[in-house]
Amino acid sequence: MALLEVSGLVKEFDGKPVLNGVDLSLEEGQVKVIMGPSGCGKSTLLRCINRLVEPTSGRILFRGEDVTRPDTDVRALRQRIGFVFQHFALYRHLSALDNIKLGLRKLRRMSDAEATDRACHELRRMDMEEHRDKYPAQLSGGQKQRVAIARALAMDPAVLFFDEPTSALDPRMAREVVALINQLFMDNVTMLCVTHDVFLARYISDRILFLDHGQVRAEGDVEQLLDAHDDPQIRAFFGPGT
Ligand code: ADP
Ligand code: MG
Image 1 (cartoon, rainbow, N blue to C red):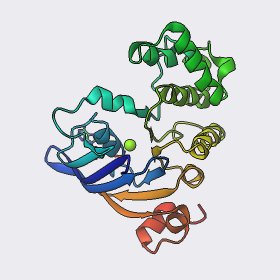
Image 2: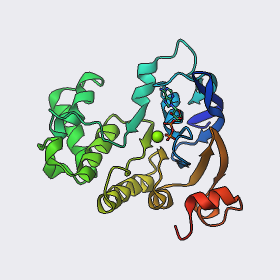
Image 3: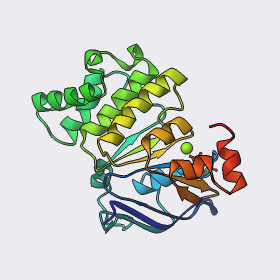
Image 4: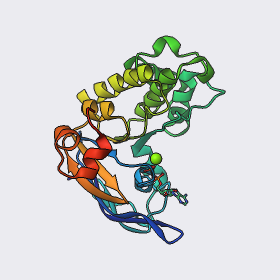
């Protein structure tokens, strides 16, 4: 059974369709990247799946359970999906360590010692343990994103969603973050990642979906889509030499 099975997903804002019948499936351990022009509905797709946005119609199965039903436990669903945003969304008044501990204490009801252990484990995984007591303002963009990823991983989600995790970073920091996400890919962490970053798409994914006007226009591996696709619009999107 797929971890995630989206079929015929439609989302309209003010009667205007933004998602136009999206089909997508994600197996346990699989990594898919979603690419496509700005405004084509990528963020809306991720947000529909964890019910930050209410789908207009269509079906979303999470481990076989329809999570578009009105009686869905949305809080429980969101705890199964770790979300990493472009602008990190860290709490400014909390240290790196406390940013990670917050959800463990409040949602997982861990003791202080347990939460510290768990948070330090994830900080180590992101090569950030020496910065644990720093506040977001004292960290670089790449370091902030590594804390945000550690925070998402600490909750032990079934899948990690990324919405343009490198687009607020300069190229050097972006590569640093790509290297760490690549490590998660090697560790078989299930991920769904929206990005414009061809470098990221190449190094972390099994398959790429090309979304356009609210529909999946093409799906393939990196070579098929980036290098050899016969649709001129898709070739133009990725451009020469990427
Ligand atoms: P992408 O992430 O691919 O750039 P989005 O999913 O953010 O695209 O947005 C797709 C379209 O939906 C855009 O035209 C955007 O303006 C519109 N949109 C997104 N969220 C809302 C909202 N809450 N209300 C109205 N329109 C929205
Ligand atoms: Mg977006």
